[in-house]
Length: 275
Ligand code: HPA
Image (cartoon, helix red, strand yellow):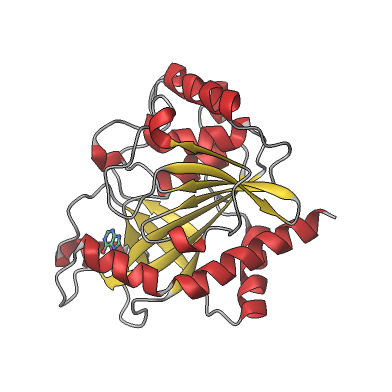
């Protein structure tokens, strides 16, 4: 990863967006737009105006950073993400995490759409990520070491913060949203999985599979942020229905009433925790 590109992006955001002591940063994945905290944003900046980030190429990713007011605290909301499979390297994937860290957000919530690797988790299942399997054959920390991202060899035994996951569980109970817990396998895509790949990921211990989240979680955890992630199951990986991005978006959007309630309740509880 080229740290100069990261620094230029952070400087551009700092020049245009101010947010004193953000409560958290939130990355909205495919179809998650409706889970954003509502209300007119305190600030907004298009990804295309952030050097090194640029507009997402994929439908379902708005491509805007906003600052939302949640109980009097700013929340940095990244509406959509860039993916490694877009071929622009790790920098566009890393920039939202770098901005979150540089602006002082202590906590990062990553959301995604994912394919189920289990027969008992249909589309619409929401899963708090307990751990991940990096099946990308790559790592965003490869390259010249920068202290911005923590130590050269960061520990990854506890990527997803237990306390934050408990807050997610409590938020789910409060709102009556059903939330399970499991392991997310991150692959590069953009091709969906073959049945043999599905079988091998399942054997390796994963519950769902998707094309994001793992790099952001690695970077966020390495850089000292508290990390949580939630997957929305949108399809059965390698299932009878041919996988398509349109179907993924449709399924995710159908689950957003519950997912939105969960995210809002989680943020409110996070704010309450701080008092
Ligand atoms: N595989 C990989 N990524 C995905 C899937 C899938 O089945 N569904 C949504 N994102």
